[in-house]
Every structure is written in structure tokens, then in C-alpha cells.
Image (cartoon, rainbow, N blue to C red; front, side, top):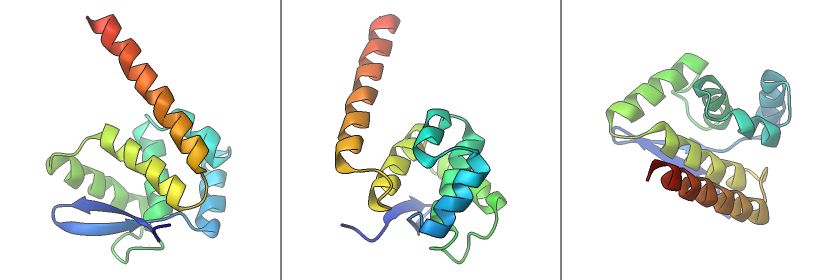
Length: 123
């Protein structure tokens, strides 16, 4: 298993992995468990909390949630999307041991079905 996931923003690499201590803090901030919190991942403030938990112990330049907001802004300016950040977050949960391979594959299939249903609605 990889030791962490990598987010590249404007040529800089950020290592992402949620430690146990940060998982506990994240659950307190979400007021639910980490996997249940994924239901609200489309909310940017929730997505930022996950990224903060994953980045703060791995990167000296990430010290506050505002650093994550700036990271998101730079990522978007660099051509990224919030959807890509959501997809990478699932990878972070996998490498952090929070999500199993089976859960990952199931969530991937569900996302594909949602995309197919949305495309049918739009056509």
C-alpha cells in the first residue's frame, strides 16, 4: 500500500493521509463518522475539512483550514475541479485505511451509475 496520496497544485506536491488523531478530530468536526460524512462531500466546507485532516500532519505549509481554502483556489486556477478533489479524497480514505478496497469498488460503481442516470436525464 502507498504511504500517502499526492495532490499536485501549481507544480507543488502535497502529501495526503489521515492519521488516527486527525480522524478523531475530523469526526468531532463533522459530528458523525468519517464515512457518513462523505454524504456531504459536495459541500466545499466539508470537503475542506477532510483535506485539512489529510494534509495538516503531512505538509509543513498547511497549518489552518484557510491554507486548504487557498490550496483549493490554486488547484481550481491550475485547471482542477471540485469533482476531481472529491475523487482523490476517496483515494486518501483508502490509503489511510478508513475505506476498504471492497467499499472503494462499490462506491466507484455507484458513482458510475449516478453519472449514467444523469446523462440519460440530460439527453
